[in-house]
Length: 365
Image: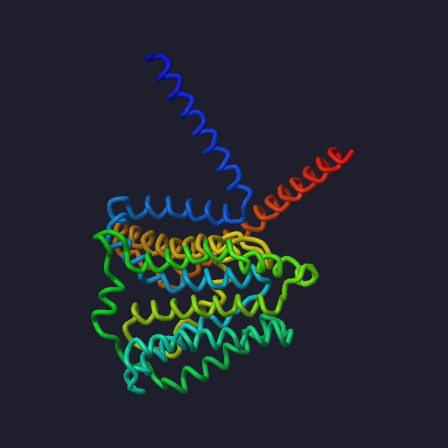
């Protein structure tokens, strides 16, 4: 009986190990593996520099998530658009649009706070849909249309709020910066809920349609899918996610600023590419999630590295310019690695299709 139980345990462990290896091999062939590998490597370096005792604290986790939740959500919204074959660089200034509408709607226009914040999200959806109409319906180049929208939204932001002003009730930013159950950052829950919505969306008909349209609009149309409608829906969902990100930014800053978030558009594109996302029908929102996490950890690692050097070598000072330069060089290296790994993944996928095709020919004979 004892030998039987030992053999049974070995069989269970062996089957579990084999299943885990097989799952990892499948994950290696997905686009998100590149971003995951880069994110994991940077996480290890960050923990080594900062120290496990300092990195894995509730306060540090709260700081990392609350300060960067808006950027992570914007990268996830950008991922959805890239999968459908379009992009939107105006998502950064749209964050500021949500911010100024949420602040001024309550303080200047006299709206109840929940209504003002919902109005901010509505403005974000409207701006995204307007960009979607220009790109999908009018067939304007996505980069040109979204860059033009950036200039328009900037003007609207300054018109609504000429100078930085306003504030939010303390209960909002305290809640946003708090922890649920004593260790889960509230902002991390927001990110998790948005990601869970993507997992649900991916399994719906719309989720399958955006991959089809992103891969080939003509083939999708031939299959009975409306590319314009599908891309407009993608812009709608993206606008809603950016609206939530704008509320996170408002909760984090606890004030209004019409000129903030300008660089989030380009940075979100960089995060998606680093995460392994291609343009059209390739990748997942998890690519943007890992890419954004990689860029967040880069900034955190560089900051703590120079802080450590300052402690080891008294009098050692480096301006923020050199810190940003080092961060950008690391990001550029991540982009180069993405190009190499993406080619390998596409080649593996191509070989898999060839094998399936040859197997089908043999069975047909």
